[in-house]
Structures are given as C-alpha cells and as structure tokens.
Image 1: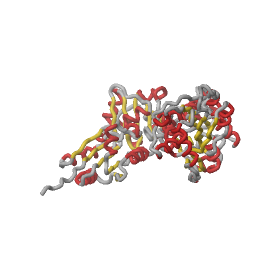
Image 2: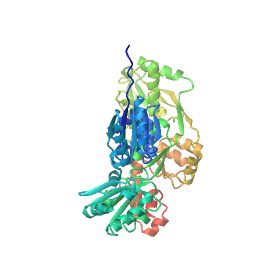
Image 3: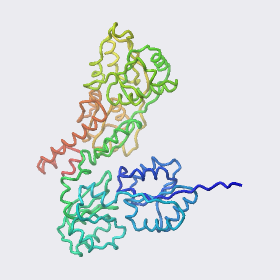
Image 4: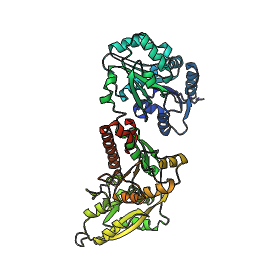
Length: 526
C-alpha cells in the first residue's frame, strides 16, 4: 500500500524594509505572495500590509506576532508541519532584531525548511530618505531595547563619522542622556525622522541638547541621525522635497481609472484620495453597438474615432462577446482624441493612425482630420462610439467635413454614490489641497454628490471643456496642462506647486503669514 506523502511547508523570515512598500525585494515579494500564513510585527506599517494583502492568496491568514520569540517560532513551525507556507514579516532586516534571531535559531533546531530574506535596515533606509548621508565610518542600529545600547560605542561612532539609530519616540530622552554622558558634544547636529519612508515622513533638525524638544509630538518608531551628514539635508533631502509632498489630492475618477493617476501623484509625494464620481454601465439597449460591431467587420466604416479609454474598452468587450479580435479591424483606420486613449488601443495590438499633435480635444482632432474625398475615401462613414452624455462638437464637425457619422452610445456614465461624510466635509472645508478633474462629468458629479471644493483648494483640469464646466460651477481654475492627458495634468500640478513654493520663499516672513497662497507648501513657511 502506497502512502500519500504529507506536503511540507516552508518558513520565511522576511525583511519588510523601513516601510515604503516599494523597498520590498523581489524575493520578499515572492515569499509573501506564496504565503498561506503571515505573522507580522507591530513595526510593519499598515500601508505596507495593505499592499501585501492585496497581492496575497485569497485565503492567506494575517495575524500579529504575539508573545516571546519561542511562541512565534511555534506558530511558524506548526504551520509548516501542516503543509502551509508561513512568513514572519518584520520591519527593517530580520537579523537586525535579536528576537527574530532567536526565532530562527529555534526553527533551525527542527527539520523545517526555512530561509531568511534580507530587508533594507530601518535606520539606514530612513536616513537615506531623510537626505542624510552616512559616509565613511558609520554605525547603524535598530534598538529594540534602549537599555542595551552601548553609548560609549555610539559616541565613538559619532566622533569617527556618522550614526543612525532607530528607537521608539518614548526613548528619545534616554538616548539624549546616554549620548551626553558618553561625551558627545551637545551642539552636535541631530536629525529626527518620524514615519520614515511613509507618506507623512517628517524630519526635524536640531542638536543633541535640544532634539527631544524638537521631536515633541513624534510617536512610534523614529530614526535619529547624528553627525556631519545632518548638515547636508538642505541639498540632499529628496523624499520630503518632492513637489507635491504632503499634499492631499482629491482624485474624482472611476475606480478602474484612478490607479494610474494616483500612482503618478504618489511619485511626486502627494497623498491621493480616490472618490469615484461616475460609474460606467452598458447602454440600456445593445442594438446600436451590435450593429456597429457588425459594420466594422463588414467594412462599413472608414474610420473609428475613440474619445476615451472607456469607449475603447466597450468596443473590445463587445468584440470579445462575438469571438472577434484585432484582426477584424483590418482596413479600418483609428483616430484617438489623446495619448491615454491611444495607449488603450495599443494595448490591443493596434497602432492608431491619428492622434492630435496639438490640443488633445474634439477641436484638436477636428483640426487634423481630413475632409471626406469621394475619390480617396470610397467609404465615407465614421463610427463614433462614446458616452451617452458626450457633447455634439465632434459629430457636428465631422459632418461639416463631408463624413457620415454613426454616433453610437457605447456606454453610459451614471452618478456614483456619495462618499463618506468625513470626505464630504473635507471637500467643503478645505481638507484637500488640490482636486484633479479629468472631464466635465467629474466636475458635475463631484459637486452633485459631495458639494463644491473649498476656495483654498487648488483646482486642476485636464482641458478647456472641463475648465468651462468648472467655471460654470463657480470654481477658480488654477492649473490646466497644454496637452489633455493624465500624465500632463499631474505634471502641471507638480510644476504649479514648485512655482508656489518659489513665490513663498521669496516673500518676507510677515507676508507669508498673510498670504492667500494655500497648500502644505505655504504651511511649511509659516
């Protein structure tokens, strides 16, 4: 009789790094995605856990680490013996924690398969994000228990070069007293960084004598940087000096579309808040789209003009229903109103023939669209799949140029449900530093479901039509890119923030306090 061998699980001790999810290594990511059970330390930020949960197995269990090292090791070993892959996720690097070293030793005494995945050390990683170089001779430490620190060794490290030390904010006074007692000069430069590598990272610089008072209000784990490197923050502080750092930006986009914009905003340091204002639904009757798809296959159209990513998606979904693919677009030319829409077409393996080189709008497309020529264009019909509430500008302009237009409702946009009360209050009270509008409908629907943004909120719009609608609703338009695309819109907002900061920096201190210029940039100067 053949016995079925019981599957053997694996154990991984994974370093999460200092907090920014982007600093997870590829090997750490793979171990987490493959995990059945994740035990995490309190030092791992919730924002990083959210990213990990989103990519983990659907049935993966997440539990906080509790008890002594032996207790945690027993949980991991039990999971592995049950055939599960278990991960202990720790802040920084696994071997930077004495308790984790003890866990690894306990697991090593068993037959369980295990690995240790390094992570960027918390102290060293946060120092880099704070713009404090640690060249030459340096000491980096993640202190779990401040009473175990060798302050004479730390003082020697400061004398020779630089020191980076991760501790609990509540232990700062003990660290100050220990450094002074060990002979560190009280005027030595110190940086204290809270929420290291996070969206709200903040660094205050002072001296050994005064850093406890300077860091008043900091909570959780903080990183001290001590020595000459602190003086280079003015030039090297890249994370906190990004153009939109700390800006809370409202993104009124459908859930499917908000991701790319939010990612770009985060790259500039903003904290995006996605609030869907419209939902995309199929047309009430599918007959128009059915005829349009049949016409595409039968050669009824010379051109298809896409005015949005949603229109591209609607046509391809209808193609998929009928078992069609990109080959059935043979002989039909494609025009796109902008680069974002063109990228959606390219994703299906087709290169558009026309994208406006100037203004990416209906007017910009019409300016470059050739009039119908009966000799050169034996097929004189254009398919225009779009939203049910789209304007008539494009269809009317094509008709004037001699084209027959099949203006087809490819999808409907309906108003989304109102956001939670706290977001509505923040919109109306100025809790957001900026709002980005990508269409007239996002303006109308945001005002409809949540009210008008406060006058101090920076209003950025993607193009002239959206600007007109915003003005109609009594909003002041501050930012509008030259080209109507999401990347250009975010870039224009970032440029506006830089300009704002330069204006404020040039103002005398008294004028800054009385300035009407708003946003977190202004607050930093007050």
